[in-house]
Length: 473
Ligand SMILES: Cc1cc2nc3c(=O)[nH]c(=O)nc-3n(C[C@H](O)[C@H](O)[C@H](O)COP(=O)(O)OP(=O)(O)OC[C@H]3O[C@@H](n4cnc5c(N)ncnc54)[C@H](O)[C@@H]3O)c2cc1C
Image (tube, rainbow, N blue to C red; front, side):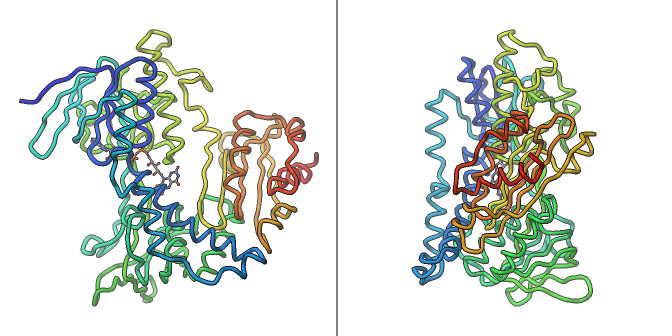
């Protein structure tokens, strides 16, 4: 007979989004229970952001040293792959979640291990291999923070071979001599460069272009750098079949060619992980949920929320945490009768408004791409009359940063309101330029005031001045 419990809010999934939702709820004086089936901390901490960035960073540092005369002469060796893996292992705490469990407990959040399923209105069952061991009823809300799962392409032969997903690539302890990467999105591109710099002979196959959701000029800089690292990039190419032969993975290409690898990494996207949660019984489609800006799920009454990758709006940790803070605040305010269940006011603490207008994102390759706000296509779709200003990054700060620095910057301006609505920077070290751009877009800073935000000399940020000058100020 399963035990039963009552609490204010049940949060399913203790990744970054679930932890933040539960944290906000408890901070507001309500009770919350987190249910987690794997590691507390979720994908980002153990299998995605942190380990993949830890694999990339040593290669970037080495390349930066080699790009500066005087330091270059001091670089006499290559990356030490086992030391890189050791440092990466420390960032994942050797896949031990004790530190995050301590935070959960110290924050006053209840933690239950097991697989959760929504069993009815405000009701959650938690099971293990032996079946349901706990039924929890929520006085206020249930939050789905179950993350996402890889999309596996219908590629002939793939089901019959052992291949890496991004989690296996981010957590591997050995460098495969030859690595085949299927997918030219952010994860495939980042991991291709990480392994190329660790010593793999990497071939990357992309159905369309490399990083084709980013401006061409920015993506081309990354492609050039990957090629310099020895990555063979095949764009506009679909694998036709994969199979194993004498311990190698063989990928057949259209037109008769084949690629050979010791490992195959499949990085072809992710979708919200909503299966097995009992959503069909609530009349909801587990392929995807519709949520308002507070995370409230449409069509389920006023008690079910979704945040982070599970909500499927923006599959990035920082944005999932932001959605979780909004949902947590909204749940608490609604429980106290401070706000109603209608759409929360934009830019209030209860609304993840920036999801629509100011999502910052970084591709952590070398060079980096840092982007926020609207692309020309998105602006056009929304009927916003925009102008585009772009130029190579060539300022005193960039020339000091690296000999032969190559970078590119773009600014999108809403011409009717005279405010910036989007920025992209590509080049070494540009990720740290991004938050200034995010503030300018979120704050809707008028261009004639932005003119007075003087970039310090000599920094790469001087590109802001160049963009405004080229725009015509
Ligand atoms: C290779 C890679 C690199 C990335 N790098 C970055 C990056 O640099 N920066 C960035 O912002 N984003 C990055 N991302 C995206 C980022 O990892 C995700 O956006 C983020 O992890 C989503 O957090 P979440 O809390 O929504 O989900 P998750 O972190 O996936 O957490 C969901 C949790 O729910 C648990 N769960 C699922 N179902 C149940 C259930 N039924 N019962 C109980 N528990 C359940 C899971 O075990 C999991 O722990 C990367 C992704 C990949 C794949």
